[in-house]
Length: 491
Image 1: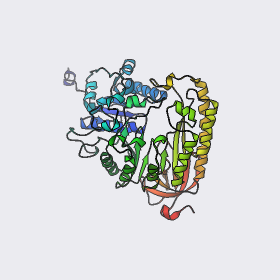
Image 2: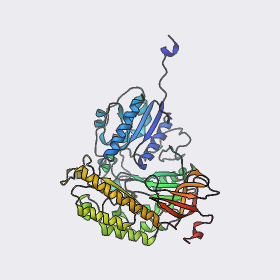
Image 3: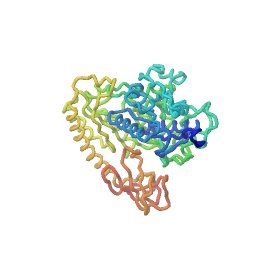
């Protein structure tokens, strides 16, 4: 018998991290990566890692199915499999019982993730957590939350107490959020808050993400500086509801102050805000977003519908006229401002007249990007119990109709931008002086892109002026300008 047979070597502590879902999950994965490295784990992108950690999404049915498929695929490769993230948090022991191939973790396990994976590697199996409403883990009054001892909010993990942090973790000193970049490129999300206090009847997110909790502005400014030092030129501010930022810190207008502070960060060329609630928009915030150098005049407004009757059933604010007035206010301050929104079609009780109202709004709104989603029941939500549930085939038909209209309108809006001078962040070198990038009205992943031709003396990560020459659907083609955009004008 060989010595290796007598004394088998323990498995290597290597982990492959798979991230599904939104940009908020990307930040959470980078926290997990930092904590794992600090605990002595080696991150691996290869299929032969000893543990595969899947940061799941649990937002809608399609996302749940994708998460389960990813977990099953990982288990088929022979590695130990761990489920974290929203699906794992939301279903806990229920998911563990239905998916014995995976160890299911809670957000509360993130602070000791290295030890959790050590146990998984050793073959130990801990009972999964029971699903619970995480809104109850923090005080009801927002102002009482920052000082309250509570559960771990993903993306807020403090580095305090973790010795000898490896190089590359963010930031280098002080009680700041741990972070390790998992992808390169000049763009990165920056999580400004987690959780949500709104009670939309169709949404389960607050129940498993918890009550709204802002990150301190000094932490965000410090992390922005660290990201800039790692090649990031555009920050995308993410949360479940960015317009609520600061309300639990005693200043409901703190976002107005945070944006200029982040934009002043050396090396950062552009700040973009996502997840804005129309009901919480205010003139002062619009002014800051449209007039602050370095802040993109980009409005990711969560309209969800345009029929007042449907919106009331959704427990949301607004109607076609109010949303139109909000857009008028934005464009009065900045005529070229970018606007995107998502819409749910087929909500219980939605009539043909409601759909017609939505179609009218879309035709009038001149949105740069439009997402159309079919309604589906979510466990534990009020909407799942409403009367007037529509047949899935009818919902699919309405989605197809609205999506077709949206495609036409987005292409039309892109064509309207021909002749504009845009500041384009170059993200990919296509060769021969041609680059793929994004203008101020285009967010990563969810919106269109701008192809810039004839570029000289620039590289990926640079912000360059370009005149829009044509639209290709939602995308733009532009020509590089050798003179600053301010001097070029529209011509």
